[in-house]
Each structure stands twice: as structure tokens, then as C-alpha cells.
Amino acid sequence: MDHFGFKQGEMYVEDLAIREIADQVGTPFYCYSTETLIRHYTVFCEAFIDHDFLLCYAVKANTNQAIIKTLAAQGSGADVVSEGELRRALKAGIPAQKIVYSGVAKTEREMTFALEQDIFQFNVESVPELEQLSRVADSMGKVAAIAFRINPDVDAKTHAKISTGKSENKFGVPWTSAREIYALAAKLPGIRVQGVDLHIGSQLTDLAPFAEAFQRIVSLIEDLRADGHDISVLDLGGGLGIPYDREVSKPPLPLEYGEMVTKIVGHLGCKIIIEPGRLLVGNAGVLVSKVIYVKEGENRKFLIIDAAMNDLVRPSMYDAYHEIVAVAESEPPVSGDAVANSVTYDVVGPVCETGDTFARDRQLPELKRGELVVIRSAGAYGAVMASTYNTRRLIPEVLVKGSNYAIIRPRPDYDDIIGLDKIPEWLD
Ligand code: LLP
Image 1 (cartoon, rainbow, N blue to C red):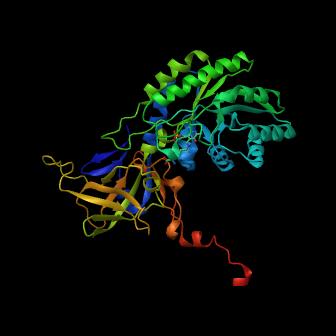
Image 2: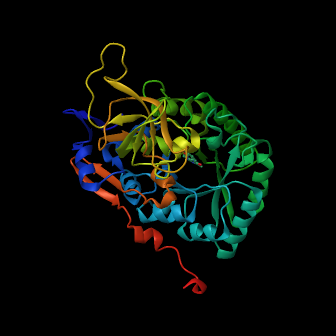
Image 3: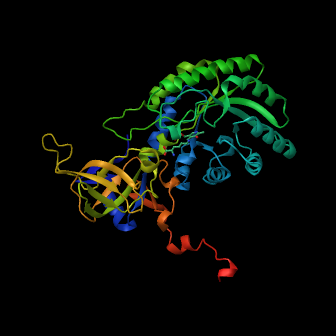
């Protein structure tokens, strides 16, 4: 459930009309709902009420300080994958002992910084990374608490670019050689083995691949314990999908996911960590944009909006579906029509690539220049993946709480972008 809906004929976020924010901030912009964020966080925690449980928000989904701070205030931990993300999580007030550090290749510098902070756990992804962490920790007189990210060789049945749990993927250590790798870790200085970790992919819409992977991990933990390792932490990663297309897709609810987890791993008595990103922030955010022109092609109608692939890359990068809705509510549909007075549009941005397409053949009410649309489910992997391609400015982010809003990242000036370039002296 989210807090975006229609009141008095137009779209609201919580108690604020989107049009009002657009008038003041200008378009395009990202707009997030505090209530929705908190609700998603709470629903996840309720699903794990019977466990020693820590939710580590995968901050890569949306790293804005205000978003992290909102979740930190609820008690959230963080899953980070770089020094930058670790710094952001700490700065937003997440205690180091609630932070796990994932990522396929942590550098010496990143390890040093994380060890100085005394984070809760490193999720180690290879033997060379383990050996490096041991060297760094030992030289600092520190002990790194670790889990290995296990690659369970399970097909997550999601988009190939965000599937991570097959043996051909670069992630984790093979589950088949995990026992030898744990034995090696137990002998190394500066290392304390405490857990097992996995993350098989993102936007999973079925529980079966999770269940298959978790079962594999249970038998591994039993073997590791028999080998004498003290395994007290089980980090199950993130990956639970969201309904991008509410009409069609009904991914499992956090409660159902929690029940499945309890059934499969509950008896192990481990501290359970999960690392959701998308499920917390995805449907807590929309991208608000304005129609620049309606262009009649030879046999297509293009709705050209002022947002583009550089602002939200998911449709062009993963062929992702995002609902697009007019901010002004349309008349109730007449018989047979999905949308009243509907027109079939290709919704595109102004960037000079055909890939700059948000949707093809999308039925929308008839729209004119200057009218507003929102692209829904844009809170996760939206702003964080934006670029300044075509020398377009990064777009603002706005956080709503009740009838208040705040700009949590302003629109930069052109000088801020162009001024980053430096001219060598021979061109001066
Ligand atoms: N933990 C680890 C180790 C991860 O790599 C990820 C996401 C997560 C947790 C959070 O997964 P989530 O709950 O959000 O599915 N840019 C892509 C998604 C990339 C996901 C990368 N890893 C997209 O826009 O679909």
C-alpha cells in the first residue's frame, strides 16, 4: 500500500496535491512519501517479529540522506557496497553495529575505513578478498567479523541483469566449496567467522527460488556447525519484488516471505538479517514530469515529457515496466475502454536516443502540452542511477510528510555541472 492517490480529481501524495509541489519546484522531480516508507519498513519488521532480527536497508536503492534518516529513525540498519555508501549510512545516523558491508570487491582502502568504524559484518565474496581483509585487519590490530556470501547456484527467475545467484554470475563463493573456504578463514588472523550470507537477485516475484536457495543454506550451516564454526548470523539478502504493474503483478507480501523464512531457517536459531531495498522505497516514490509536446508520427503518437532516460534509466536498461498516470484524474471509463477518452501513446523523453522511451503503446487519457504525469514506482534505483547525459541537470528530490514537503536534493545550476570540467593550461 502507498500514499499516492486521487482526491478532488487530482493526484495527491499524502495530504499534498502533486500539482502544487510541481508549481513550486518545477518539473521533472522525484517525489517520495514518508508514510509509505515507514509503512513498508514496519510491515517487513512485523513479518519477522518472532526472530532476533535486523533489517539492513540496501541503501543503493536510494541513498538520499533524508530517506536513510527516515528509516534510521525507525531503527533500520544498512547494507552498503562502497565506502561512499558506508559514509552516507553513518552520516544519516545508522549505528556502525547495524551495518553490513556487501559488494563483490572491497578495496584495501574501503576495508580500512570500515574496520575503523567497527561495522557489524563484512560479507566476503572471494578467497582473495578474504586474504586481503585478514592482512588489513591484522595490521590494524582489529578483528573483522565476517560472513561469506554463498552463491547457491539457483535461478532467481528475474531479469538477467539483476540475477546474481547462478554459478555463472560473478557473485559470492560457490556453495560446493564453502566448507573449505570457511576452514581457511578460521585459520586466518584478523578474521572472526560469524555468519552466512546470500543474495540471489532483485525483483523476485515468486517465493520458490528464495526457498530453494535458503534450503541449500540450511544444510550448509548444519555442515559448517558440524565442522566447528560458530554460525550465529544468517543474512538472507534482499530481492523481494514489488508490483510495478498493479493490474497484473502480485508479488508475495513481506508477511508471506517471513513465513517462508521461518519455516525454512527458523530452527537454526540464527540472528536473521534481510537487506531489502526496492520493497522499502520503490513504491514510496514517483517521478513527476510535464508534457512538453504531443507529436504525431506517421503511425504513432508520441507523448514527449520533460523527464528522460538520464533521470530514470530502468525502462531503457532493463525494459522495465512503470505505470504512467495523468495527475488530473480522468473521467470514469466508458464501457470497454481501459481509460476514458484514452489515446495510445509512446511516452518518450527528449534525449537523443530511441532507447529514451518510458513506454510504448500506453493507453492514457488524452493529454496536452503542460499537463502533468507521474511515473510510478520510481523510488528505488531511480535518482541513484541518474546521470547528466545530454548535459541535463540532475532533477530535484522532494520528500513529503503529511501536508509538508521539503526539497531533499535541489536542482543544480548549469555552472555546477559544466564547472566540474577543468581546462588544461595548454588550452587556456
Ligand atoms: N543486497 C545486495 C547484496 C544487493 O546486491 C542488492 C541489490 C540488495 C540487497 C537489494 O535488493 P532489492 O531488495 O532492492 O531487490 N538497478 C536494478 C536493481 C539492482 C539490484 C542490485 N542489488 C533495478 O533498477 O532493477
